[in-house]
Amino acid sequence: MEDKWEIPRVAVAVDLVVLTIRAARLQVLLVERGIEPQVGKLALPGGFMASGQEDLDLAARRELQEETGLHAAQLHLEQLRTYGAPDRDPRERVITVAYLAVLPNLPDPVAGGDARNARWLPVEDLLDAPGQLAFDHDRILEDAVERARTRLEYTTLATAFCLPEFTVNDLRGVYEIVWGKPLDPRNFHRKVTGSDDFLVEVGMRTNKDGGRPAALYRAGAAKALHPPILRGSTTGRGADGTRSRA
Amino acid sequence: MEDKWEIPRVAVAVDLVVLTIRAARLQVLLVERGIEPQVGKLALPGGFMASGQEDLDLAARRELQEETGLHAAQLHLEQLRTYGAPDRDPRERVITVAYLAVLPNLPDPVAGGDARNARWLPVEDLLDAPGQLAFDHDRILEDAVERARTRLEYTTLATAFCLPEFTVNDLRGVYEIVWGKPLDPRNFHRKVTGSDDFLVEVGMRTNKDGGRPAALYRAGAAKALHPPILRGSTTGRGADGTRSRA
DNA sequence: ACAAAAGTGTTCGTTCTACACCCATGC
DNA sequence: GCATGGGTGTAGAACGAACACTTTTGT
Image 1 (cartoon, helix red, strand yellow):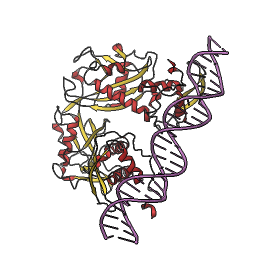
Image 2 (tube, chains in turn orange, red, blue, yellow):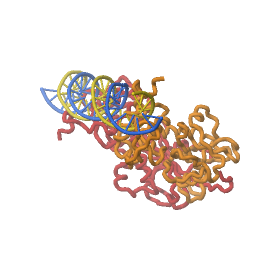
Image 3 (tube, helix red, strand yellow):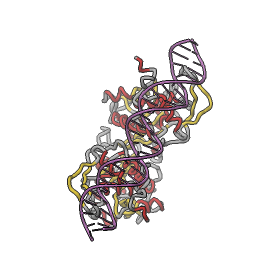
Image 4 (tube, protein in one colour):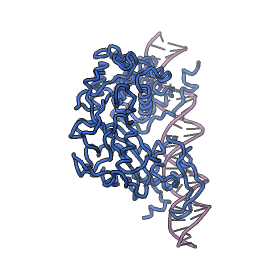
C-alpha cells in the first residue's frame, strides 16, 4: 500500500435497483433527475454516501427511505456490484455501489421524502430500448434483473415480491413474470410445497382468484432452495391446462 | 442527490484474493504488512486506487502486478464485492472493492515488484484459525472461497487453476481440492468431456501420472456449464475404485 | 505378469415433465 | 350444472450414482 498522503479520495455513491411486480409486469423504481448532469433524465434512485461513518448497507436503506418514502420493514436488500468506470460521471470520479431491492406490490407506497418524481416503469420497456436511463444505469439495471432471475432459482427471493400472506398461485406469478415464461401450475405447486421451510401454511384459505379456495402461506425460514427451481423447467401449460385452448 | 460540495470523499482500496493450488492444497497469496496499521500482520495484497482516472478492474490488475510480479496473461479476475464497514480501517474511512483471482500453479511466480514478502498459505489453515489476517480480510477470504466453490459448479473456472494443457485428472484434482471432497473419476470424466465447449482435445497424450496415458486438453470457449457440475455429486471413489482399499 | 491410471458400459434409483383426474367453490 | 382454479396421482423420459469391466502404459 502507498503512503496515506498520496491517496486520491473519490466520491462514493449508492444506487438502488428497486424491483416489484405491478400490473403483472416486473417494474423498477426510477426518479427524474433534478440536478445536472442529465437533468430530466430518468435514473435509478441513489445518492452519495452521507457521512464518513455510514455503513454501505445503511446508506442504501437511507437512500431508499429518503427518495421513495419506503420503509425498511420486510424488504430484501442485497449488494449487487460496484461500478467504477472512470468516465461514468462527467463531473468527477464517482464510484457507485449498486444494490438490488425487492418489494411486494404495495398499494402505492411512493409518496414521502423526495419522492415527488419517483415512478414505476416496466423493466422490459427499458431493456428493450436502452438509452432512457442516465449514466450507466442501463447496464446496472440489466445486471440487477439477471441477478434477480437467478436468485429465484436458488433462493427464496420470490417471497420478497409477495405480501406477507400469499397463495401458491401468487408465487408462481412472480416466477412467471420475472422469468417471462409460463410454468406448469401443478408441478410448480408440488415443488414449492415440497421444499423444506420455503413455505409455511397459515391455515386459512382465500378465494380471491375464483375457483376452489387456495391455501395461504407465509415465507418460511429457508433462504436457499435445495433443490433449486431451475429456469429450464416446465415449458408451460400443457394441453390439459386451461389457457392454451385459444 | 445532494450538491457536490457536501459530498464526503473517501479512500477506495482494491484487495485481491489470489487463489491457486500448490502441493495439493488450495492456497492464497498473502503479503506481510510493511506499514501501520497492523504492521507485520498478514493481509491480502491490494492498495489504494492510484489516479482518479483508473478503472477498478485495471486497478486490480495493476496491484496484482505490483505486489506479486504476476502478469495478467491468462488470469481469471472477477469482482467479488465491496466492503464498507465504517471501522474496518482505523485510520480513516476506507472502502475496499475485493477481487477474486485464480491462477495455475506456476513454478514460483512470486518474485518481482514489491513481492519480497509475498507468500502462499493454505486457505484451510487460515479459515480454521481466524484472526491471522489484518482488517476484515478473514471475511473477504471466506467469501472469495465460497464464490470459487460455486463458480466451479456453474462455470468453467476450474480451467483457470490449470496450466494451458491439462488432463481430466488434473481438472478433477482442482474440483476435489477446492471442494474438499473426492469425486468419482469415471463419472467426472464423462461429465466434463460431454459438456459442450468445456474442453477441447489437443491430440497428444501424457503419462506423467503413470498408467495408461491420458489425453491432453485445453480450455474451451464455454464460460458457463450447462448442465452444472453440482457439489452434491458422487460421494467418492466406490468399492471398485482403487484408493478405498486402505 | 502385475500395478496403475484412462476410459467405456450398464444398472438402478431419483427427479423432472407432461399430463389425467379429482376437489371445492361461485354463479 | 358448469366454469374456474386448487391440488394429487402417475407413466415415461432424463439424469446421476455406483460400479463392473476393458484399454494402455510402466516396471
